[in-house]
Image 1 (cartoon, rainbow, N blue to C red):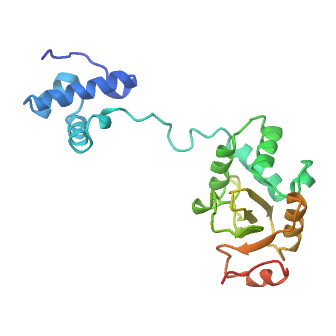
Image 2 (cartoon, helix red, strand yellow):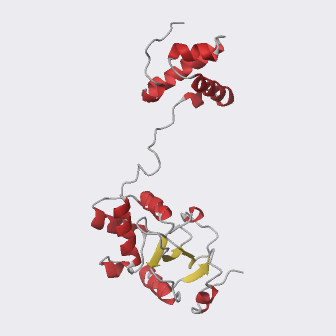
Image 3 (tube, rainbow, N blue to C red):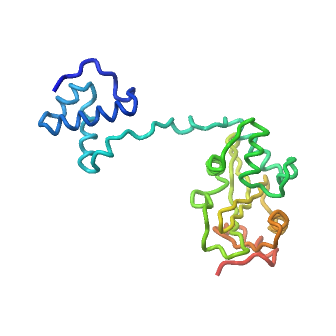
Length: 235
């Protein structure tokens, strides 16, 4: 085998070249050379060679393909902290019609329109979900994909405590989701005193009557469920 001198660091290689390097290194170890010797030959660390060999032995050739290189946490964010704070401030200032948008409760689409207006950035629905998670408006179990257990004509509703990246004070959000994963919510700076207005806005926006089923409802606010006869307490 030909020794490779002056090879650049493995992390700087294109994906196809890195895969080829890994294959060659694993093959060299398989031929009987020590991992230390192979690391020296290919200009990489012995630890790297060892991890490639172990991965190959446990998972086969597919493990030698490099994963897509991502940025560090936070670097991939399109919106700056200040932009996110501005968006959250508008969400918490009232329903979308108060902000000049043509709907009565916030949705992924309405948030995307707000971001486009306030920040000049167009975001996909999946990216909107990532920001809603980041702001703690929805929980990781409540990215609210399809909910097959949600009865027809009902919406699961929960109370969350989102936070602006520019402030430490927790806000308040009533979040409803349909069985198909449609997300609708209101945000406020002060605690809600009832759910009747939220349900009224949902009914008008959906164009039909709706019944709310509490989901992960906070124990500190049970009385809010008693102010509306169309809130169905879970069994």
